[in-house]
Length: 423
Image (cartoon, rainbow, N blue to C red):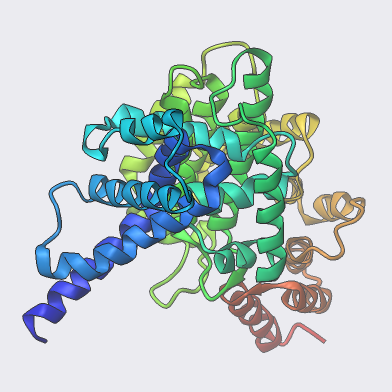
């Protein structure tokens, strides 16, 4: 391969990485400087700056501060666009604002973080639906495409595009939305911020569709943004640290959740040597910080459950009784389908599969949920009811759009049938 081709490939990889991890910062900075009412044009300017980098950097070299270069390029494009929109000289006030926009090189890391945090709170405005909050956070802050968001929501590109358009239109109605709120408003908004980040992480940890079990980019983005919330003096609070701890404990086990060909590996069979020990240590640091105050949130309880699994030297040494206590407390705070099904699996490990099946069968409204049928299949198989287990596995497979999970289900069905125990 020729030298220019190698350089071009390197630049392409770098720009792709920067767009994923820095586009949110770019948009956040420009929204503060220019205004949320121009959010669509700002997003286009950010994309144009990436295209400009792809064209120039292979020949001029990568600048010392590529993020600043991209922000400066997008800023200049926005200034040019605003000036072109006018058929007469700009009013003095607007001309002064444009000329006063600071060059990107002067922006400090603290300013970038502050702007990005403002954008997270803007995207998680309570006037928007939860889906709109998550979609906007993915699109604006995390740089995800409409197609990627549609995949996460199991819907069409057109539906996501309409949802984003409506959400932006509503946010334009609140000129004070691009800020970190205070007082009771902060409390309300912070709850939606953490919930959005929680949903983003969950979609990454167990991708609802696609070929891979885990979307690491989603997990990494949720962790990065949650750490940002937990580190800021205004938004730092025990439950933000608890959420960060939860994500870190869970993400630490990702390298062992699939085998070399991408197939699912159950917790008991995972190679603990593959777990990310630094992530676990970071999770413990955040977990300790979450101990301040009097509130015990759902994030605290889930983080304690995740810690029990991540810190156990073996699958047999886990304190399942304590985990069940946490799940019992969790269900009193808020109902979660995933948490309830995980709780029932723990019940089976302590009290046996028949007791767990009794609780599972008492649940309503989960017949269309693939994890319900997967849990039922596991319990039936453990109880020796193999034929019924095959039926439940088959139902779960029909409802599953993730190829890695579908392969796992097919393997379990084959195991039962090859054992000769399924009629």
